[in-house]
Image: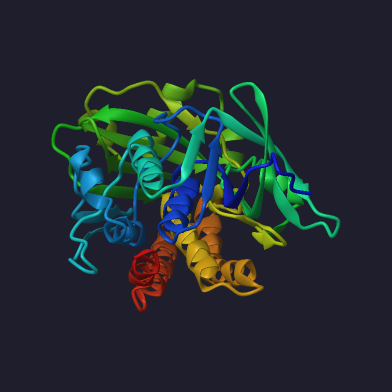
Length: 387
């Protein structure tokens, strides 16, 4: 029940990282009154592969934010090279949809750019504020949130509550969002930031039982990860994180470790099960990892988050009684093939002969996603809706 003292918003979003901030930006540009709450501090980093695929870069270009990403010193990526046991293949980034390069910004860069843009569009973005529960009406429809901001209780009502609060989403838990699909396996990734004075585009390495990647990012550094299956790592001696990182690099990319510059401390993604949750219901929706998380071995999480933000904003702009249901249907259609091929790659059950086929399927699924997000220029429709 809404009272005179309870502020009301069109949309309340839990989470102000890339999924939540992008959703807030697009909805605010459409004229919606948006409140965004995030428990972290503004401009903080988080564990990430950073890589943006073409779909995400196209969206940032359409939203007018790509100059800010490049202006933050994020190096342009103009090719992707796949290093397999029996072949090395380089694919150039061809100019298309206004995009001539890919980028891999640090999350403290990208998330801040999106949060600033959401604020500039009129969204009320608050850091150091959290959601602890949702409000419901007598029929069970979600009608708002209960949380805390600055140590004080916060209560607000909304036509729609969006969970963009990550894998451990409070909103998903409160609404009982169940996983419709669960990945069969997960990988363990060990990341280090390495000095990279001459950025040399994306490099992905795959050999029996191991994978690695070199992703140029900000501050003259590259994110270099090494990966294997969680099951395999549990069965090996505990050599320490640094030693395991070097051993996996040596297996996936022989000679790479010796060519790298000084590196920072290792950070570990411990292997978490992927899922595709039910992402919409009466008065609520989920975007980003709150609704869909897949293994980082394919470095596609940020691209998915920005995609889903736009699909949801577009569905809300179109209106109708089942707007969030249409969002989930489109999200699922674009996600399932990517989700399944990522699960196969994260299992590390493939051989050197099989990984090439998985990569081809991944590329086809990514191309389908980009085509869907650029068909009829949905970004232009969003711009017109806000003008």
